[in-house]
Length: 388
Image 1 (cartoon, rainbow, N blue to C red):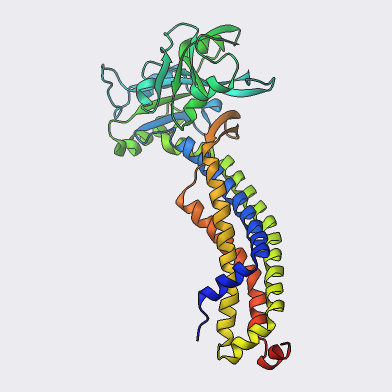
Image 2: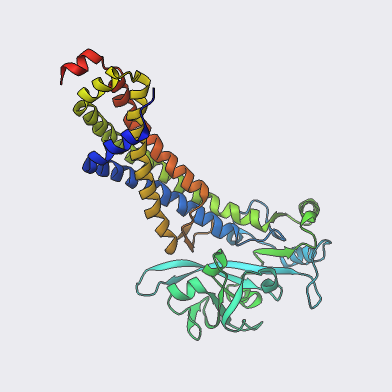
């Protein structure tokens, strides 16, 4: 004969304060776990969505990012002439020779500098990035010291708004436009003419060649052509894969940190739940004896007390997850370990993050309630009723 679940719920309602305190401790643990997981997923989403499956990125072999890559003018010309590259709307091939460098800018409202990505673009660059749209002003003219800033950069850095001027590479660069790239890494970049930037930085080589494939299924053919050409010491990757690798180090660090904090904090929450459940057992010895006398089996007693602990965990887990969900309205910036530049992104709550968070809460409830439930189920009827 099973004890109805309403018995466990009524018991929790009777002990409002201890139930609330125990659930609160579990909510804190779930909040920390969900927040760090959402942070890692937000970073991954931002960088992965920066790329397109139709595009391929060609960089120096073994280069972890475009900043550390180099592609000579001769190599870039060879790549542009390869088969499989899509044609542009106005003729020509959709292949962009780009340069990526880092500069230090000062954040608005502070005197703290931070690294920002400067991307030198060519005529095909805008056509390759469909997620990028100009919201203010115009594109920089070739051969000039004009730049456009990503929306995130314009908001957070001095001199990056339209009409303002930035000084770097011994030049004065005028911001002639602002572009929005949505929740992608491009919003944290500044773009200018590639040739002008190469001259200003005295850099004779490009960082990468971005190309749009006529057919995404042709990627392996293009990759083989690039990597088998003896004139090239380059490698090709799908743009989505390339940017996913950029997020790997940082997202792994965040997940490890989140798991470590969760384990540490959960120990306290489990101990709190255990103390609460032991107290509940001690105060209901006669009640347990009565239930046993009425014919309820040990397994029913065990299940009833475990249900109380699991329900407490579910309440705490839900509360912690609801609190963490509000983090989606915030945008933060951090250092990208791969490029050493600042990257702005938002927290991302997915179904799997929610499922994992609730699972963590239920595990805490199970761990905290198991021993007290076993103690309650092993009580002898005579000993329990003797305390009446």
